[in-house]
Image (tube, rainbow, N blue to C red; front, side, top):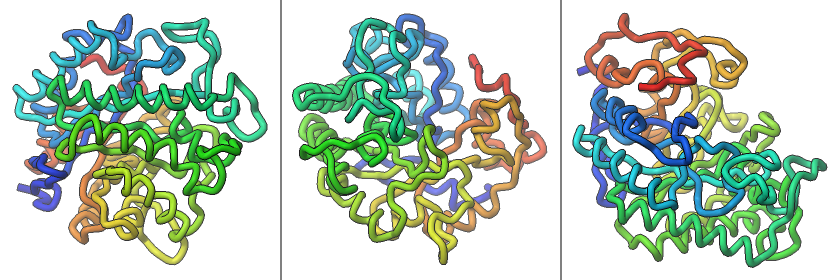
Length: 365
């Protein structure tokens, strides 16, 4: 077996993951009417059969009318959709895998008059999509609480349906991240203020979800410094600020941070080679997932601009994993183009690894 560190087990709460490979969440828009069908179940089953230790699904939206911009993005609250997700979880488990849904609200990133409820107002913490750009409506406190409840209900449904945990999408400039960022959160109530205060919304989601699912059900939150609105921004410019930002979520009961970067090999702060996941683990001791162009030479933004990417060595990644800088490895596009990527890495079939092509963004199987 190649790379024993990558193929050693890891435990979060009482969930033992067979190896360190996590399928990263990737939006697909292949669920007409918001309902994941048999093809979606086959898609995830193939990645479990291909050796992925833990699958995190594409973003699936909570029960709020403006959570989604696309009728083909799956939801995680309507009866038929939940039935479809149960089939997905059962297929993955039948193939020997583990799976968690990613629970999502787009906030101001949802264009007005789109999605399954086009008449619903686009909402965000302060009506801002990015600094100075107003779009939609600022949430009042009652609706903030209703969205917190909807995220927690999604986690409850994940447990009820037999999933192995749940992830909250708190990255990339979507709603939870809009509360984090001072450029989109100018509130003067308990959900605004300094960075650690702007974490209140996420911490309340985690705490409410924890109360719904119990202590033994793993909860993960995906976080990022960068935003779609601004690739270069940093929520926390220093390690001390990063630690203060993370602490409320730890106290609320989070079990793992999924630390999204565009390139896993880039250091997060000057004077250290640690990446984002490495710093989060160092500061908190909480398990982390690293992600960002794993197994590929080019980053995912280039893919959206029509560029392909060649398969790339993972030796530096393995050195970092072996040193304990992070615990799990998120793999995205490499698993879109090749569902057997994990098994090929394990078996040393490097010459059979496939390059990523732009058309793989619309993968069906």
